[in-house]
Image 1 (cartoon, rainbow over the protein chains, first blue to last red):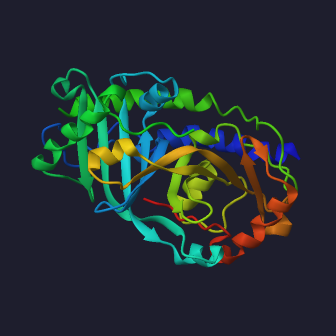
Image 2: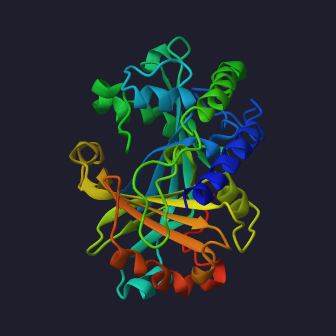
Length: 173
Length: 173
């Protein structure tokens, strides 16, 4: 009974090592953000999950935060501040009621990720971004960076989380 | 400006290949579920993200679905049915209002993942699980499998998603 579960896992591991090297070519894509000069890091969609969230109000989204390996390692080892090289990605999708799921549950209770809204990144580089506590911030919609005014709001907004190195999201086990 | 972003990504990739081989030892952990004989797949928390969701009502949770490499490949290539070896993990956390985030937004709008509720798995093995359309189902709370009665509800509940090989969750780009 056990082996049948083990085998696909083992196959998946071998495949993962090969697959993992594919999309992450070390090339960032597209246009760089104002102020911080950050491009969308290649392969970020393959990064591991930090946590998830839902914002009501004007944002009205579902969110997932992913971390590159430096960020995930720091989270799991509870190391603060985050070391240089850490990158946190925040993926935001439209908050969509799922009629299909609601039918199964027999009531309107199910909300799923719709189309993407925007993607944000926090990039740790203590020298380059010394003026903003070592963090560079980036916001993209449809692959295009937000403007300078938008990027000026990032750091002040993250200041309340100073005690956790300006990162709001906690790791969800 | 570009290189400073590239370097941590490249470092992360190298680290990831090494790190990725670590936790996934091919060993599943703990007690097996009734009916399907599934253990918690080692390293599932490192799998890549499929999507996120929120259930209201009695469930009242935030959810993330992760896929092993076989599952992610099938999702990205839009291949149905899922091939043998595909495993989908559903992580459910308590739905928690974040006072810290609400202060930043200036209103009560922010909900984050609290402590874990349960973890579920769908394991594709068309021979072993032929009686349930090739899927084995598993539900764990605090590492312990739910009982037989609970596991009997899995397949009938997933039947409405037959057109998508009994999987409700769609891939969130």
